[in-house]
Image (cartoon, rainbow, N blue to C red; front, side, top):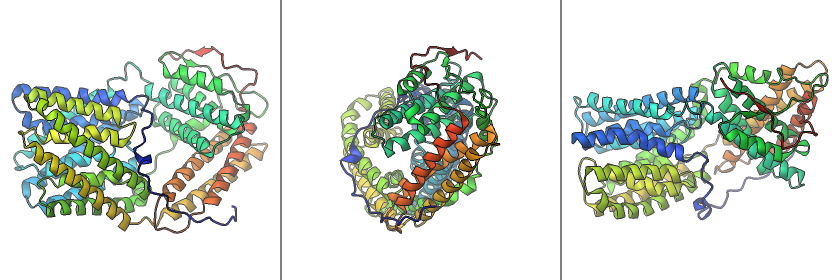
Length: 567
């Protein structure tokens, strides 16, 4: 371990314009956008036909579950979506029962804040992915303020459960057409980022940011492939070999052909056969075609960490969420608001991995909501032409929110805001000016109070997590170096050591980045982090060379061999 002197961590200048900068849309932005429309439309249109559009808020709670798990393989997606539906129903049940037992606004806000904290912690611990806890909190908080009786609760929950089952079917619908679509996309992303890094490294302009992004993409591809713990198919094995080639490119960029990686990535994105990677060198002591993926089988057999062990580090974030949501709701009540849950949900949506990111989200939320209320005022005359027009406007806002939110959160909020306002009109129309004013005030209150709570609840453990991540990298590096130098090391041990070291490096970078954006903490060992990363990358390169996994220099990017991946 290096004894380099730690450098002080400086608080970054709070971004404003940078927080609003638009990025590239996701490659599959249309999937959640179309899924949520397909999940919301049938139940809502059925209620229009029955003349009971006032019940659409409950069916929409279940329908919104279709937004989740689009990046996961279908075997894993089935489980995740089922848990999301159950989580949605659990939060909804607590909210409905509470609403039926009391109309005390302070009690309702308190329950909403506690629910938001639990939802935030569980979603982060399970890494359920976007939209994470925000949708769950929106549904549970809103229904807290809808008058209920205990006798109505079972029927409302049944509506949400039926819509949730339909959302599950919508989420699983593409499986027969592209059974390996998520794995293909993750593999293609890993190959593209590895090619970009190899190109910069070969050009003498190696970027630490590009290297970290490439390692993160490769790690994400492995997580996607390993998420399906059933017996691997021929296609999945071929994709695993391609991710191995991306890993090799990261360890030895000078020996990599970026054009070939990009050609493989383009071929993988389609629905045809997966490209043949070409066998690694079969020198004595190297991995053969069958041994190459032995580390994959070992990782697939490892059970995931228990949930309770992942919840512990999230305690400061959960406390921030509970305190911020409660104070935002109380402040909204003090100002005479009829819908304090808007302030509560605004506060809940702010909390990210650190304070710097939380500030950026606050800026995005305020700007998006302010523009969104103007859009609501513009579409209100159309939405009030009748129940069908209202449903169509809600569907359009759902599609727009998911289509745009990938470019920047504020842009998606421009559609989320009128969506939330239109949902309040499902039981009956309300004065537009009053709705707009309440939403603007609650947005500002939620953002200000929520961020103030984030400032008050500091995460003193961030530095300790960096130290633990550094220790994990050092141990993984020492093990990999020892095996790479040992003449009797087995292919399985080498592959497992290399994969473990790569995962530790990715975790160290994510932990260090999260800690660097946290305020009011002790000095972080930034120099030690950089030195540890550099040493780990040298060891990864040595391990790759020891395995004999370097690509054949005589193979060109125009290779056209393919592998039959039919079931």
